[in-house]
Image (cartoon, rainbow, N blue to C red):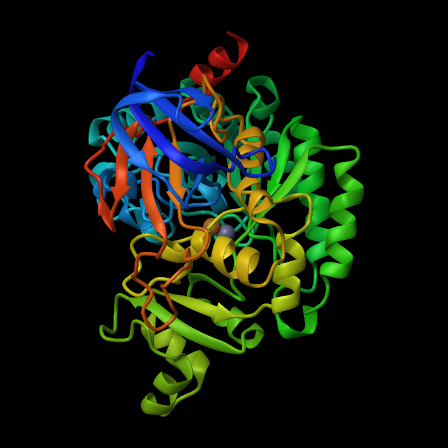
Amino acid sequence: MAAYDVVIRHGQVADGTGKKLFAADVALKGDRIAAVEAPGTLKGDNEIDATGKVVAPGFIDVHTHDDTALIDNPTMAMKASQGVTTVVCGNCGVSASPYLRSDIGHFLSLIVKKQANVSKNFAEFAGKVDAARPAINGAFLIGHGTLRMNAMGDDLGRTAAPAEIAVMRDLLDQSLGQGAIGMSSGLFYAVANAASTDEVAEVAKPLGTWGGVYTAHMRDEGDDILKSMDETFEIGRRAGASIIVSHHKCSGRSNFGRMKETLPKFSEAMKSQEIAFDVYPYVAGSTILRSDMLGRADKVLITWSDKVPGMSGRDLKEIAQEMGCSMREAADRLQPAGAIYFMMDEKDVQSAMSHPGAMIGSDGIPFDTHPHPRLWGTFPRVLGHYSRDLKLFPLEDAVRRMTSYSARRFSLTKRGEVKPGFYADICVFDPATVIDTATFDKPISPARGIDTVLCNGQIAWRDGKPGGGRAGRALRLHDMQAEAKA
Ligand code: ZN
Ligand code: CU
């Protein structure tokens, strides 16, 4: 019998495709899965006992803002602790490269804490990620908002002129050539809100040439959501790119129940276009503090405030009472700041998550003082709360929405399945106990039931702490395309 580097024994394999659990041993050699065979037939130098556990592909967090967290916090505990082995970064229109300016500015500060971690081109940025040797992999989108800040300076309250569009398009083209996997837009945000549909569609053109994906934090997720979906579909169509609608939600009490409109619209559009969306398993969202969002939310919690310390984690209503002013005024006094907004309907979240087009993405914001619990809880919460406890979908399907489906949509070659020849990205978890422990009160808390997590064959997480493995990589589009052809 050939000796492998690692054999994971006696587990039930959820191979990522949605296929029913089956008993098998999984052998790893180097950074690959070498064999999946009947229990007891494989021998390894190291053995991991998975009796009573599920052996799944490492989870792919398709919606993150972890661009520079991979460099600053290379153990990536908030993700590895959930079984995540790949994060897709650069969502919502903001990426850490290519960035040609010397100031970070308010928008980039969402994802960047150190100036040294931004880069003037993607190749340099990906090099910084590799040099940091993160415990898990990163794949990177280029933010349309970041491109705008390069091409237009601070004059962002208008649509771009043709020459500026050309600058953005060239920067995107160059970045895709250097390995970025697509472009994200965040037309909801001030830096990009004035952009016309034409602007984004023109800038996005290189996606069609390179085979990059288009992800969209849509212009509106409330009253005008259907119009925004049409706009997003049009941009993808004109660019010749497959589309991922980010963190799909119907926001604000007056829009509760409108998944009945959006989901059939997705299903219809999916017949003629490559379209999917991601969902996080919570009724609250989180982003920067914006007074125009206050009316939409039932409750607002502060995640950070640069101006007034000690506000993180507190209810804005209480803060306003203390200050003796309106919530709007209190929000103004805290700026710049971040917030959590309770603005979704539980039933809507569940129907979105179980739609055939849905995959799981956390949208966690890594540097918040008091982050949304999704940063530490998303994947175990889907497995434990939604799949096991509420039986929203079978465990195998939950795993599929976090692995093979996501890998296929983002063209992450040979990831997302437990299959010989695939990369040894693995999550061993206990299906009986897996659950998130991060809450809105205590958001920084590792999940329960995640046993051992390997990325490229090295242990990224074990026994409730980082496992010492630092084998993550910046996944580059051309490498993945070449491997898909080979
Ligand atoms: Zn977003
Ligand atoms: Cu986001």
